[in-house]
Image (cartoon, rainbow, N blue to C red; front, side):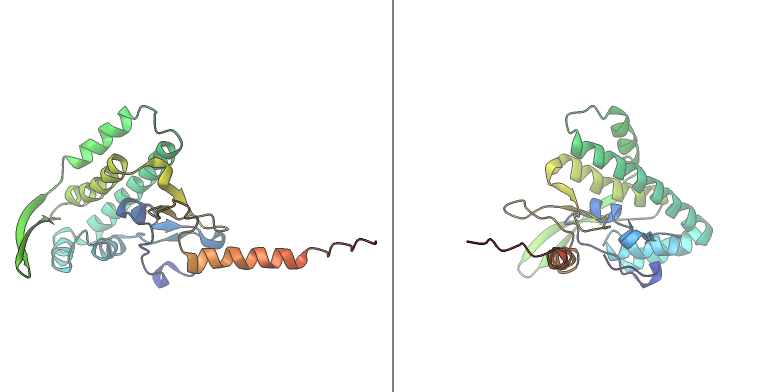
Length: 212
């Protein structure tokens, strides 16, 4: 994906699943690492962009914790991301392995969930929606853990893929009908791959013509 400073990069939601979007908050395009949750403020901004927290809850959260505690939470999130990435990669390659240790850690995170239900009206219909309080660091990390749990419980490991673009490290869930998706973005990595293939063909020496 495009490079640049981490401040210039907008959070990416190309993966088709929020657990993988969270994994993609660190990327290494063209050999340069970009960290999207490098501090507490950046992490809260990502939570809002990902609809894990709404703007009002995020503002209260910032006031309650303060910058130092937010930075500590971002560090915990980065560690959670590292651990989750390693687990997802292993699960993808070996779905039949035993994951007892990982499940204990995931379930410990899930135990801090702070959710409640409310009824909203959509035209003439009423719907029950889940709301997150997000009043403590544990609840925020639990919300991300729920997405990881959802990925593991409801998706096929073979459909969790890494972009085939040169130097791209992004993950995605292949929801295409034929399950042949290769790139995080056809417009970016897919197009780069086509251009690289075209240039490679142009560099090949012409085949000698056969004499009759």
